[in-house]
Image (tube, rainbow, N blue to C red; front, side, top):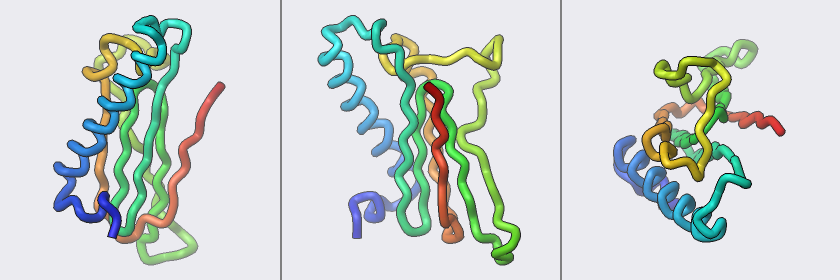
Length: 124
């Protein structure tokens, strides 16, 4: 059993993802010497384990989740995360090194024994 599978519920999984992001962001800012502007980067992370999918993103990344809903010829597809509704423009984004990164962090945990795949498309 993996550490992810040992977590008791979606709330604990979200906390684990947020904690890991905090560690990665701190290391990134230290590596940049406190000036991350030259590394305007977004981040999308997926943890996939039997029965669970965890997704964390800062910026404009997305995840397409495929689930078997009983008909192999017609799987279900879902999009994570949902777009922020407080953006003025559809193409706005927040970068990992931005002071607003923690405020714009999006975390989803999905419990679904039918998840059989995911895709994390990227640009750039």
